[in-house]
Image (cartoon, rainbow, N blue to C red; front, side, top):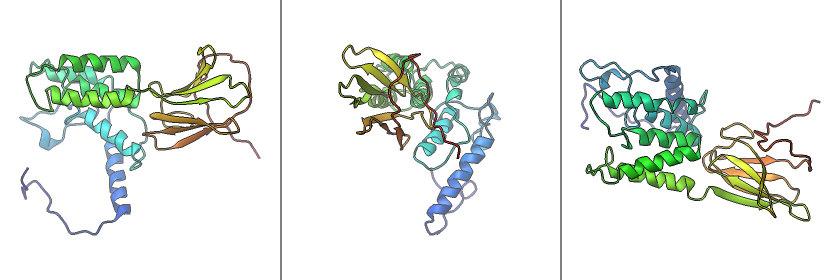
Length: 271
C-alpha cells in the first residue's frame, strides 16, 4: 500500500521509549475492549465499509476473530492485561461468520483466513479440547485439494493451520514425574490438551484424579508444558504461553473423594 497523505499520517522522528510504547499498546487494548459488544463484537471501521456496509465482520483476516486473537496474544506475551477473557465468545463466531459467507454465496468454510478454520484454531488455543482438534482435522483435510493456491482461501492457509495444530497436540503429555514417597506410587502427567495435571496409579496406570483447568489465574493453566517434583514432594509447573511457573505445595496423603479436583485455589493464613 502506497502512502496517501489524505489517509495516512506521516512518519515522525521520535526516539524509542519502551514505556510510551507499552502505554500506547495498553491504551489501544483497553479502548478495543471498551467497544466490545457481546452481540455484535466490534463495529466495522468506517474506512473498511464498502458501499455503505455497516454489519460487523467476523473472520480471522479482518474481523472479530482476528481482534480476539490479537488481544489474547498481547496478553500472552506480557504486553497488556485484559479486563476479561474472551474464550467464551469464540464459538458463536462460527455461525455469524457462516452467515457472512452466505451473503456472497460462499461455502469456503475450511478457509484459514475467512472460514471456520481460523476461528476453531483460536478456540483451541484458548480452550484446548479434543473435539475441537478433531473438527479442525476434518476441515483441514477437506481443503487439501482446493485449487486456490494461496493463504487466504486455499490449502497453503489450512496447511499452516495444520502445522499450528500439530505443534499443540503432537505430544500432549509434555511433562511426567513420580511422587516422592518411597514406593513412588503415583505418576503425575502434564496434560497439555486439557490444561490439567493427571494423577495416575503408577502400577495400574489408572487415573485416580486430576487438578487444574484452563485459564490464567492461580491454579489454572495456559498452555501447560512442563512439570516436575521437588525433593519435598511439591509439584512445579511451567507454561509455554502463560510464561509463568506455579508451585503446588505437598500437604500429605488423603482419601480421593472425586476424580475431578478442579482448580486448587491458593489460600492465605490470617494473622
